[in-house]
Length: 122
Ligand SMILES: [Cu+2]
Figure (tube, rainbow, N blue to C red):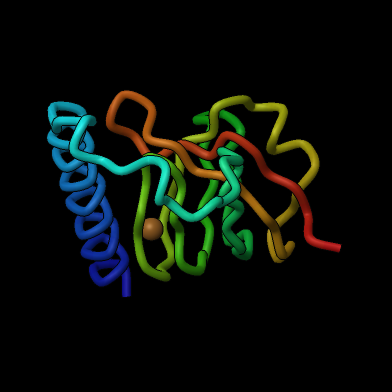
């Protein structure tokens, strides 16, 4: 059981790295080739909320383990799994407890999937 969790985390880190490489690539792409005018209007909000359930909280190490659904933020994309995230601000952990259903945002901060917003689902 412990081993399969470790495998999940490994897979997760890999997809994060892949995303980073991809993002770097697109930065170098020729923006002139994009037809901005013809792009459908879509929300530009950076808050791509993901849903999950709290499995463990570690205030000392500023981390949280979440069983999460699909994540698709501006810098992180991954399928559903249970994994540990870094937390940007320890204060985010004060409002949640194990078992809570939460909505959260994940961003790639220095190569680490980091929870930047976290709130209990009502
Ligand atoms: Cu994950």
